[in-house]
Image (tube, rainbow, N blue to C red; front, side):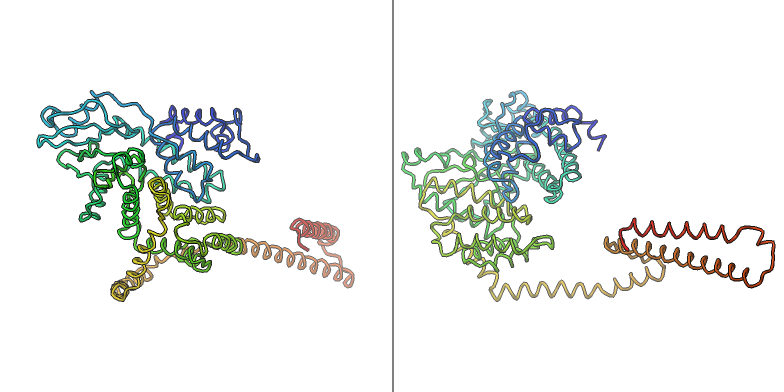
Length: 556
């Protein structure tokens, strides 16, 4: 850890200065990175203005560059533990960066594709079409006359990101060691997940494959489009795709002026996202307006698949179950689903959790679907989870963010369109498929095969264990904290009992000597020593020591 700090000392100082400058001196002090609280506007016991904290965090993350901007954007999806006031400020984080020079673009593209720009492309526009913290986009023309968009990764972005990720891991370790809520929410695990996501986003091959996978979901749907990837002109740092030109989905006036049907667009966007989430379990994780273009014929085109979400079959069912039980007003159903997901630990106090879920149930029970916000309902569930320290899985938090983003766009297109109503048939289809006799039989057969394989391996496992036992190498490691405390107390009791027995034995010997000398009246060499007096002193000291030990323990 120390070597990391020494290696990245300059970057560490930049991060510390950014926090100190914006009034987070106490936070830096708590982490042990500063010896004083100087410059701190935040004290631990103040009634803090969360919006002000959010604004200052926004300033810090924006100033620290790509990694921290992405971290803030991901944090804005974690409504299960980030307060709404801070989330709203983090959602404003944008990749406000200047483009890098064209000579660097040329050098990267030529190095990645193995030839000069003039030999690879008929034309290459030197002015970037768009810029971001990780890369920028240029238009070009292929030898086939096709116009393409080329995403070029920013030079030296990878070592910068890796440095920041190492520092974030170190900071997360410090937070878990010194701050209780950081341990409770397993901050280091979150940073690890963020690191995996960001590294995947830096691999343009991965982004291209994500786009192709979503395109296959709508291969027969003429109302939906994903740009085709030109793999012969693509690498990990250069991604070439069809150039799609249209109207941004939130340019509502332009859509109206050119005669587009906003309701049909809203329906197509909502249905496409719900299909990705609830049917295929693989969806666009960042469907903000900059990534959605409308083409003639009300065609919805999705772009930029660096961030995607994945839901396993069981997770899809659990999500649908949460929403359906919320709509039905079933507190028991909601709690059972949370329990099935393994989120209700022994530390959670169930009585207040049930009370808050009852209150949430009353909010949505018997309300028309057209009046319910799906994103809002999910957000409310996350708020209750946060209040009771229920850790919502990361895949659900990204899902909640995607739904809220999509719902805001749909509401702008058509305020009367209900996402919840649109989601109902998808939820019903999901449950029907789950309880279809064919699928039940298939699942049962898969479980039978797994059990049969386990049984087939059992004799081999038994032979291995038997061999270990015969060699005397079997070791049991049982660690029960309460047992250690009990054994310590038992050891104390046995020591005190032994001490008392020794004291009793010594006392009996002394009494025997006194009685013997009184009855016999004989003089031995022993009696020339004041044994009785010495014994009395020793017995008295031992007795006082035992009393002191008992009183010190606080138990009589």
